[in-house]
Image 1: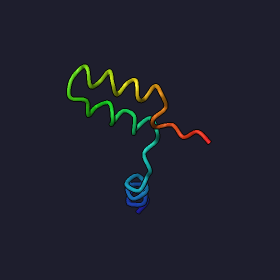
Image 2: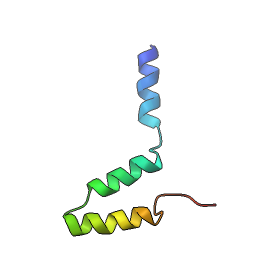
Image 3: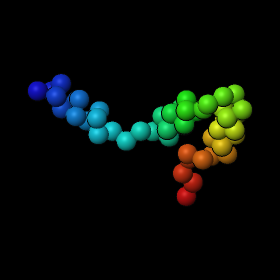
Length: 50
């Protein structure tokens, strides 16, 4: 029962900013695209600033 609840909670978890950044970087097609994406991440594309 507890394992089922844990699996459900893990499935409904919202990805963190770091998870989203890594997924974005992993989608790069080549080195130039990766460098462009790294600059976007460094500029705070996935960070929320209030």
